[in-house]
Image (cartoon, rainbow, N blue to C red):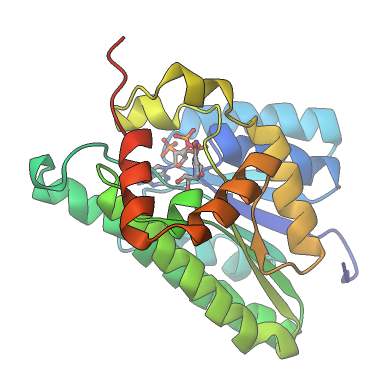
Length: 265
Ligand SMILES: NC(=O)c1ccc[n+]([C@@H]2O[C@H](COP(=O)([O-])OP(=O)(O)OC[C@H]3O[C@@H](n4cnc5c(N)ncnc54)[C@H](OP(=O)(O)O)[C@@H]3O)[C@@H](O)[C@H]2O)c1
């Protein structure tokens, strides 16, 4: 990857746990200064203290709720606006509301669309503008394997992740001549609090094959710095993607429906 003079800075959304915390650990290990963001200020501060003392890097915390329309402006003001140029943006924050579409409250849908679509889109715009001026920048958008197949009981989530994948691939083509790299990471299931927070207990067979977030973060960043536009980590996920392409769309959706059943055993 190209570098500019001085320490490079990365901002990671959803840094308070799971895959986001794993990205932070990897980036700190590579010597990046960090800006951690999420809603849980205590968790972010604990992580910041640990990373700054383990890796001797500068770590700042900006707690925001990405469902809040003013959040993106706050993040830009507290980084670029405070003389801290951002070289790497990791759009990682996300969550799912598990359940039949019609059973989910309308307010929950709005929050989901804001966090999964509006916020990462606005963050890409805000930071890509300044990255393009500097002719240097890296953006990693965390989508999901569900971007490849409409998924019952995760209907909004999977469609939002498909949006993020399409958006990222188009943006990558628009920006690569300006020195800005855009990659999209599509992980399969991982061992993080994601499912518990969504209210879904997956089948133990699925849980047994989940990847560790640290491994996914490592592969995601490696792909980003190698300028890969689409990153599908893990052999099973790569195979799964190929398998899905051989099925009719309807069969693929039926298969996804089996994956998304609640385990009641
Ligand atoms: N785990 C999986 O199986 C899986 C598979 C494919 C893709 N993914 C994607 O990977 C990403 C990371 O998920 P994870 O597995 O690490 O889940 P996680 O452990 O639940 O972490 C989600 C992160 O998103 C943040 N977040 C949620 N709502 C937010 C909001 N309104 N404003 C700001 N931050 C918010 C949370 O921070 P706070 O709670 O502090 O706000 C948390 O740090 C997500 O985009 C998810 O869709 C996960």
